[in-house]
Length: 623
Ligand code: FES
Image (cartoon, rainbow, N blue to C red; front, side):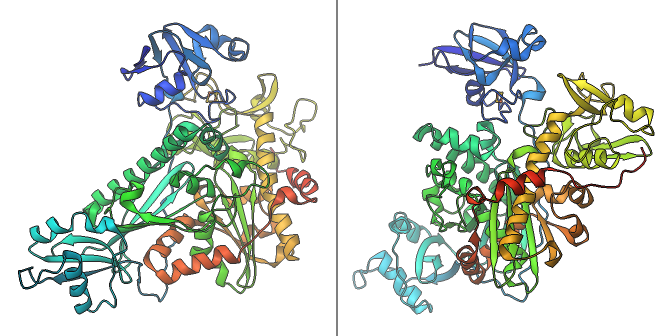
């Protein structure tokens, strides 16, 4: 029984919850997703809502932290409990924003013909009679044998439950879905021309799916959505903390992963006019935490040294058991993980780029809510995970946001003035990862950020800095800041600016990645010049300017010309493993072959990190 009723405006959504429920949780139940980048720890300030009426209890020092916003009736939804019936207004800025989702990827089966794990065989069965009273299954297996299937068998009771009725309704003409000689499901009539599969990249923030005709390997549709788990926190650590609260919380996360994946499946099938029940195979990639949460496995050990996974090998189960909205007998499989913090998505990147077959040494960097780095070639592959934090996704940045409409995505400082672009050309609402990297790279070139990362001030400014740039150096919340978009031009009632703390956050993030690259190079006994290609995987790698990434030292400066964006390589890897059993086996081999380097256990990490936090000396351009 609900104790209190709360109404969320302007949605007019009402929900009943026990007295003492957090506003954030009540909103989630009412279907009004509120942004909670920090996972409800009360530190990101993104969940600000107005309590219009009702009695509440506050946690933490909200009055002191929020200042004028507190006086205006705003409260942190994650730190405010409902004690009576209430009305809460959720402003646009507090809502989960839909990011730009990267669907582009390089898919190449090369010379290979599609050879998926499942196939279909059409058979017509003799009707049972008093002289032929064989059981339905035996009759079906005999027909399959006669149809050329060697030693057919049915280890799954699920495939039998509807068999008697199905056979008779189909007049004993059916199509068997098989994995080698194993019967997975039976479909009425002749459906061999409809053999579909879906490759899914279950990211921490977004889910992307590619619907494929398994007979030809052709991609029929691509769909994407926000991972519903973002309402439980933006980063992997927040999800692990939420999951650690108990079995019900783990189920909530699992349901959120499944509902996001099902939405993608529905959209992709609608685009291609494919019936969902004809999708017979699904292959997933994602980080190790996502794979755990998808299967409902407690991920708490991922967050505690020595950061081990509950399972590294790829798991599989029938779709009907998992709750995935495709044919209930379809096979759902995950690619294997490499380690606790290097998951199946990295296996996908290696498989799709082919770096495990390359003679030359390549470096792959995949930056999402965490950063994974792989170095090597066909002889040896090394991988590490860099605790870059989610700064590149806009978290921990004062006005950071995901790459959604209104995010500043590119910044230039030329001839003493600032130009910028926003996603969708909308008025600026904040700054996303690519904008952050560009802004700091531009500030470096203009001499407004020094090697240690300190923003310039009146005392340190060079004489030839233009009046426009000078005027943009201000103080915000008691710290130096640089205004990128004026209050008049922004969608907010204030300028969009980069603070000293934001620059420090970027340094921490890029320092973690660059230190990871350095340690892998040392471990392999290589110098940066030995690397022939730098592959930037994922959305961040796609949208950033490589010159800015090199300028801030995300990877060695001398490799700028060898860097290229490879798109959603993890998703492309899932596609390859979906279409070809041979490549699926190759993915498993990759996971076994990669040597995982745990940076936390390396004595040289601290000094490499401290060094990598600094910016390299550069030529200042006159500003
Ligand atoms: S401050 Fe409430 S979710 Fe971050």
